[in-house]
Image (tube, rainbow, N blue to C red):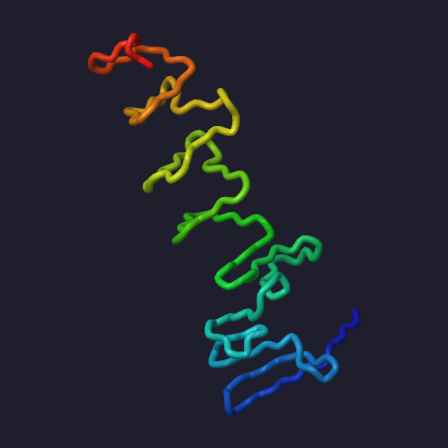
Length: 171
């Protein structure tokens, strides 16, 4: 096979201690890699971490895999925002500090053996997506207590006991 190369410039600066590798297009340095003090910057001439990628948008991100038709990418879409346009799966624990927004449909768990734990409080209504389809609890998994200001029900079954309250005094 035949190999072709663009013009590569190696520019060093003793003043700043930076090694610069770049391709040249129309006498302008492009696609620049900067190495300064053990840190590498791609499009970032002053990297403050071991690897720094300058700019925002998908073209300034990291692409994984070699499938050019279906690349998996992670990139900075805006200040303080890391984004992927692909699926993201965490095989271990995921801890998120701050607010989490689950836009679109959200599934918690993938089997009936999974548990969902609420340590905080619910700050919204819990409304089913369809009427008269879903249950709160089951015949074998009962809630211990319920605390309500009002109960609006079409049917009530079972035995109700509460002091002197009888069906005759219900509104």
